[in-house]
Length: 86
Image (cartoon, rainbow, N blue to C red; front, side, top):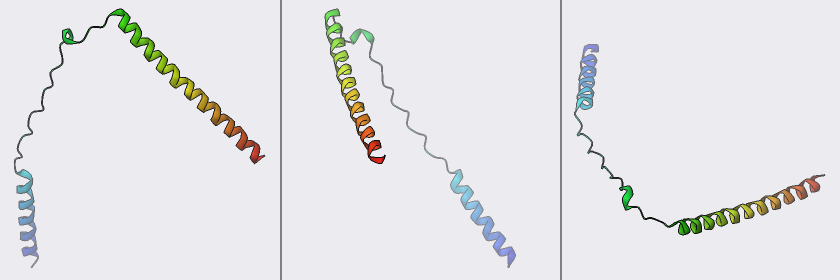
């Protein structure tokens, strides 16, 4: 009876090996995205660039100011909480 088990095991091993050995279809080539030539990018005049930069600087300043106020509020809340603990 052990001989039949060995034969059955061999058949299963062969089937698994055959399944694994099946060739798979190759992956399709990945699409190539062409880069835009630099001469097609829009040109900005120096005054437009300065205006855009000043707007960005103002936005950064506004965000920074809001963060400073928030940190101060958190520090005040933390101090109040520490006083309650004492």
